[in-house]
Length: 236
Image (cartoon, rainbow, N blue to C red; front, side, top):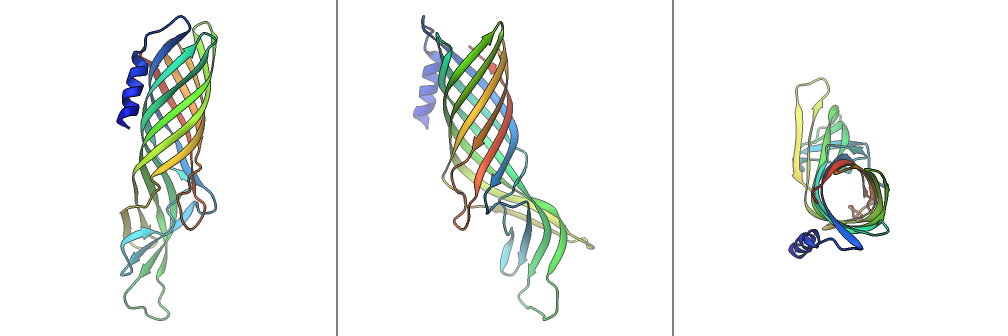
């Protein structure tokens, strides 16, 4: 990773030539991160009690987006024919959510005829932190001071941590069940990506779609999706 950072800084420092020039950008994003596949869900159950200590969500891979943000440094080389290529390095905190509609109590002593599954309202978020490398290539279109960059690439995201956090209140009572646990995650999430950047002078608006191909689950199919929207500024 440190060698990639050094390379990114080196590219930013390469002087412009007759045929090529270098741009260095900073971008910040938010957007809609969620999971797809037969193992992803919009609704789930919180389990708690003697056999579930601490409490946990039965399926935390949500098809609903939570709050996500990303900050990126990007180096781009532009040719005389306005072809472009480069790479970005970002820190990402991406969250999906599931709706909690039931909580399941698992007591040490089970009484026949007693109900242990209760209606509830709440949600659980699965928050992942990544360091991501994003090589890309594409084409620039220019009209006056306006620029449109269209490029594709691949995100290679090193997952630093994954945390489930949420709560649900049991209907008809004051009981609140909370979850806060570390969660298993793949070491790397690979996401092919396509992105547009519409710019005026140094400022730009970005929109991109990332389609994850790494399975997050051993028992089913669960893949990440990220529709990101952001703003950028060209430093040089």
